[in-house]
Length: 291
Image 1 (cartoon, rainbow, N blue to C red):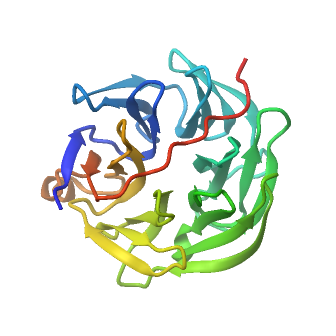
Image 2 (image 1 turned 180 degrees about the vertical axis):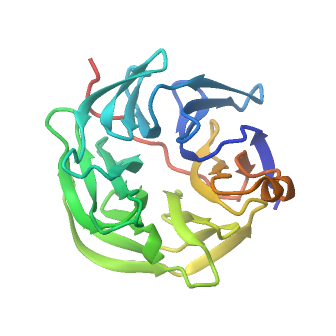
Image 3 (image 1 turned 90 degrees about the vertical axis):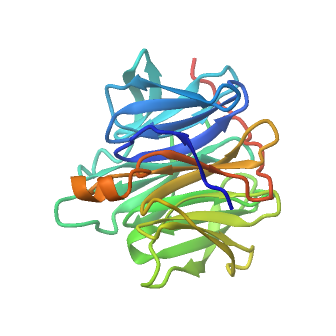
């Protein structure tokens, strides 16, 4: 399978990739580099905006703006300036927002991670925000939440706890409650660590493996269906894009790599693109308002 470099962005920690049908562009963030990136598939050009805060995840809204998940909470960014309107986990000074995705009803579901000096502790949580009330906690007791994604019918929510190498599935109700958690998949020590995910139109989960050099497609029962080797050791997140949602875009990182390692892996930190022969699902736009 051909693996193309869509954008040579040289991200320190590329993440949070989504397809914006409104803009006709792929959007992603370099969390540590504090940039919001945009890639136009028609012109094959990319551009970025410098940010005042670490942007970890985000969601397109009905008016074309973005609900922004900054390290400290939810808000908006205007001309690169972060405006946090809903602080998250102020009682946990070592946690920050991490992964986030829209559910099929248009709620923004996002998780946090512990970045304390002594290593991640199980103090992170998964939250939900519908735009009409305060963010609501769904799950707790995690170290680094990742891989948030939803089945095509919206009745299953996936979430990974990255350091434990586990991906979990939860029954997810139409009113946004997650129950009955069960182990969906576990990455063995020969692989990497489960990072960001997306679900295709067949209901299969695509998961990027941090330090695994690969992206893995799981069937709805958690069995490995396909493994695609990548030219980057730290793929981070993925999303289907393009007008027909047939291209899988994959962000990557060069975080923690030495100069020698980067020279040996020049694709690290780029936006990759593959055409895997299946299509993605259109996101439901954020149901709330940012006015």
